[in-house]
Length: 384
Image 1 (cartoon, rainbow, N blue to C red):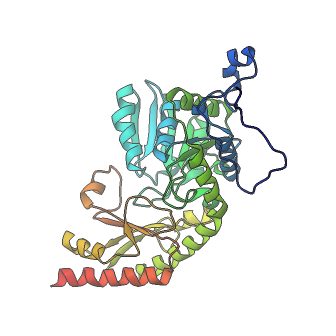
Image 2: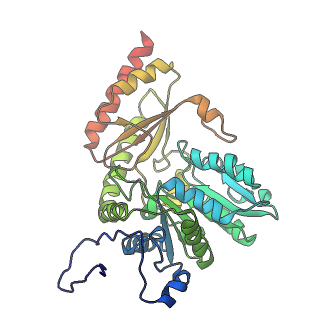
Image 3: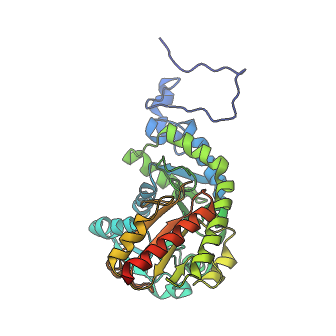
């Protein structure tokens, strides 16, 4: 019995259908024998996707101004797959020292074991990156702003140097999203997003994406996805696609709330430094104003010197802000990074512990009141 899905031209819906499949069937023996010729866009097995996945990839590609997109099971999977697809033994990788911690760990622990030379560079290096480029340099990895410490990179300066030397560039653009920063329009070759964050938007799905205009890079990524069996669930694709429908209104609200909260906190006597490039007067604000169209909802701050117990007290006061490592969803999240962790970096202007805040969709004035109350408890605890 042939149980292929029937079609009904009389049915239409505003939401994309969820196509689940592991096995893809073929109309003839010749089609089956030549099934690999369907790559990179067609369907040959469930690991390379279904129409639900392709529809999402098309949407993300359009947002990024790209010709191609591949989605992966998580943001970290997208990062690692990009690195594996582009690098081999004897190659040299330049990676920003402010990159996502697990991206750095993968580069050090896995790529170096495969014979790739890994070198971290100062995030604000700009055009001076030229002096680090070697004949074997194959990839420059950017993240702007950097994870936790929020340094912005001079992306146009770095990509201009990279193109002059024939070096591929890739950027983790999760903080700004395609709505805030057009990476490919600034001559980056590959744009990576943790779709887990703004695109999903509700802290209930893991996914990553890689977008590019380079056909060769796209084929390499799709081939690696197939070889490694990095399948993405159709239901997760549906959730991210639904999240995209509201991403702009969510981000605009969250960015406005973050701006207000950052401005108020920056004037607080207990706040030693705000790390939020969208804030006037903050480090790299001029670069942000030049290159970005929208800020993210994620910011970091440093408080006056105090014992760890004071931070325990502060975090105990948080109710609207949940304690967690992720961000970008509709609910606000707070995270803490000890001084010892940041001290392990090679290049950082930030000394001491950092609090990172992701501003959600709750009332921004209520969020601010909670933070001010937590700061008051923080001060009281170390003045006893």
